[in-house]
Structure formats: C-alpha cells, structure tokens
Image 1 (cartoon, rainbow, N blue to C red):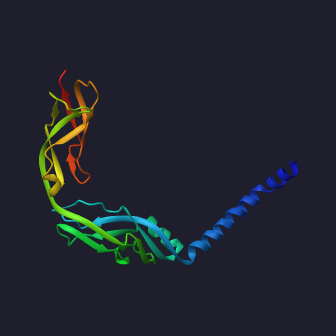
Image 2: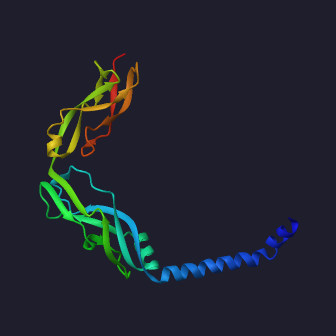
Image 3: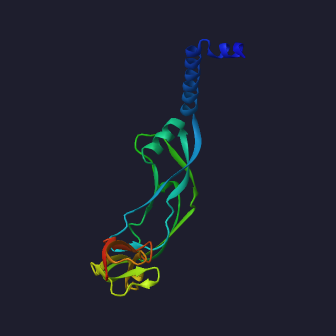
Length: 208
C-alpha cells in the first residue's frame, strides 16, 4: 500500500501538468475540426405590433443543428444564437409558420451554418387585438369573497388579448389568512397567463 501511495505522489506536479496539457490538446483538436452539433437555443418572438397580443403557448426553446468548427459553434451559443419568430406581417387569428434555418440568428463574424431545425418543426401562434380596461378587485379568503373588505386601489388595469380582457369582470386577490383583520398586502391572481395586471399587489382593508 505504501508503495502504491509513493508511486502515485512521486513527481505529482509533473503528472498534473501532463494531464493538463493532454486536456488542452484534446480540446484544441475537438473544437478546431468541422462537425455537426445539435443544441437547444432560445426561441424569441419579434416585431409583434403593439396592437396585437399573443393568446397561445409559444415554445421557449428550439432544437437546432449547427455545422462548423466546434469552437465557432460554442462561441455562437455563448454570444446569443437564437431562433426568431417574425410576426411583423401577422394579424389577428392563427399564424402558422414552418420553421427553417432562415429563422435562426447567428452572431456576426462566425463561420457557422444551420443545417436543421429539429424541433419545433412548425410554429403555431394565436393572435388577438390588444385591449386594456380597468376592472374591480375582490378580496378573497379560502371560504370565498371577504364581506366588508376593501381593496386599495379598488380597481386595476388589465391588458392583453381582447377576447380575454372583455370577459374579465373582476380580479381576485390571493386568499387572505384565516381570521385576518386590519390591513394586508395581497397579490392579485390573473385569470389567464396571457393577461397582465397592473399593479400586481393591492392593500386590503378587512373590517375588524
């Protein structure tokens, strides 16, 4: 055992330097040769008109295959390579788009090609007119609406797809604690992830 221990630690610094150099050589060879690599990149919507709102899920990522030197591909990822869904010419209704390499943005100065967009193959997004209105706030508890409670402000701004905004009659708070009295800061709960509520909190005055 002592012999093995001595063999392992003898000339340890030289051995560590040798391993480090071997890793550097391997990394240089691996990143300097041309290859095909597949990675997930962010998917972003661009050029959406202020008069429109999205009312359907949009994938957060796309799976893309790149061709080029490994070093350039890694740099492209680090510098913000992404897939973009251009909605500049879109109007209300469903927009269907067949994904292609032209939708992938590569940072300038890198010799990298996009050879395939594996997922999603097709992008579908539903758009509606953007609308905004003020609606009253209801203070809630686990048992339902709190009678005698008042929210400050009493109404909040709701904006998003017109089909959802126009059917929103009120916004509720998170449930106040059981037996709560006095003033409480409560978060507001939107009826849909596609609706935006401003402000996000109200001060609830619950009768003592």
